[in-house]
Length: 497
Image (cartoon, rainbow, N blue to C red; front, side, top):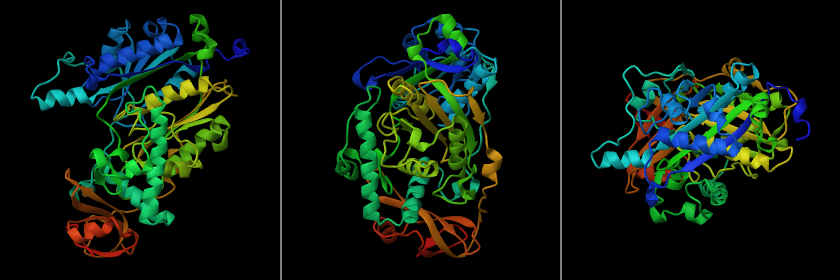
């Protein structure tokens, strides 16, 4: 990079990435999440060629851990990497968080509030579950009373409306297939056409994972295998079989190291390791799904994602690499449509959450790390990373390049424009005629249909939630189009057809 000497010394640059799979399923020893993070950071420092990055870092942002309760995990990580006094940043829950942390790091470095920033996260869910099933607890860190991070990145937000919970819909495995069926109907596909499209989309993701050395499942599945119920690939929430759902039964960590150009020069980090964050945005759709104007659209993705393009001075066709958040196929398809991405192009660099892993909140640390590796191989290449938390709720976007941006790191939060896009009113109790807007059929572990969950619209445009346990109706819901069908709803949420 011949023009390194002319760069703005405050320009943020991503210099090191690390990923680690702890294969306890193959007999490897167990590390707790903070130890996994520390090891991923050591890998990232080695990737940058400079271990001093860890001991000189100004702050560490730790993605919220779900497999163990930590009050201040950044302190434990700092102690493990030889930086016990590091400023610690903890986060709320959300798959958007890794990119949100990078967006904060980019601003802090650009504005002189930090020279080196660490971003990391990990889960050890298999180990935690194994201990719990055996009636015990792992011998993991117990922090002193009163432990707390130096800084909290935003507050926890309630994402489940009490009426949704009262109607039995409260989990991602329920919401995302419901979005999927609404998406199918909006596109005018038949159920067989739609199932074929899903299988081909996810088969493409598995092919990417098969070539990703950091993927948990390095295997390419055929569309026929994904559509089949063989080998435990049971139906969970129609139309999603198990392999269409995120894989949380993994043990993984990832880490990113960002610094200023000035610090990278001072520490002698080779310029061929540098990847530049060009722009980022953060935003959210309505916190309650009940208030979404549409179940298969996202104003936040459309507005904040395209704003990131504007800030970076690029468009969808300029992207050499893309990683669209992939907890479920509906999240990928809706995001691609809102961003103007052709869904026939590769939409992942990792293989996605079903195959590559990166569970719960930390997947995007893995996707950014993998994107960095790809951009290092692409002279002049630009890449996009999208991040999603909740039920297509909280979003963050990052544009990265193998060459410096035309202007210093840019960031925006266009929430006012998103809020102005409109919302829908929820009716919590209604008795009368309705029209089905979206639905799914949930199955038990023996693959028997248990309940049909549906969002319905009243004649005045308000939304309500309902359910049915009618076995004949549940069977029909999986072979006939129920979106747009007339129904009756009782005050206690029972649907009749």
